[in-house]
Amino acid sequence: MDLREKVQNDLHESLRAKQERKVSILRLVLDSIIKREKEKRMTIKDAKDEADLEKKSRLTDQETIQAISSMVKRSKESIEQFETGGRQELADKEKEEMEILNQYLPEQMPEEEIRKLAEEAIKEVKAESIKDMGRVMSVLMAKIQGRADGARVNSIIRELLTR
Image 1 (cartoon, rainbow, N blue to C red):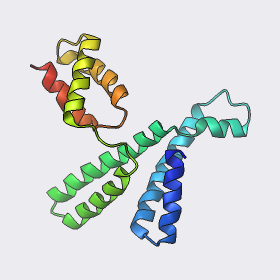
Image 2 (image 1 turned 90 degrees about the vertical axis):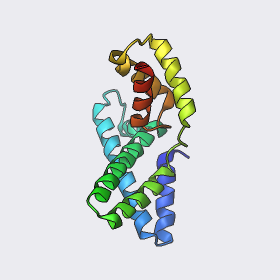
Image 3 (image 1 turned 45 degrees about the vertical axis):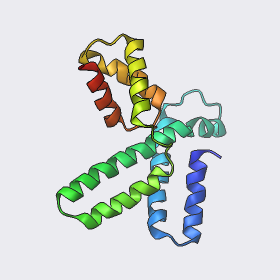
Image 4 (image 1 turned 45 degrees about the horizontal axis):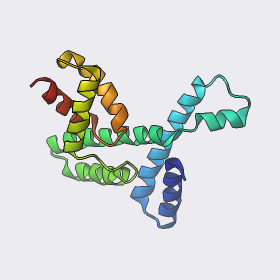
């Protein structure tokens, strides 16, 4: 079962259990996945027929993780804004949403492991200064694949390159 199917199955279970908030969040996740599949579908030119097009436009688990990760990122930003604005009840709702979304993401890497991979990536691309940060980030993010927040990775690389 791929990640998209897991989200769909959890949505059906949540509907049966009448968990309104979780249903709402999982519908948003599925909408995001479907939207990305439609975008992907527009770029496919070598499909033989409709079934082949449908198969090729289906998101991989990694692409699904990216969609969910962007939703988590938006939730984090919203939480910060709500807390700054004194709207704790809305911040709490966003935190609840983030907890549900995080269930579909791979476990986050510890900082020591990110640091080790960052050092390897710096050596791999022969980075010498902060100017090489983009190359290091692209190599490292390919290895991490959704298991760490990009901002966290960015700050670790920045720290290592400015020593």
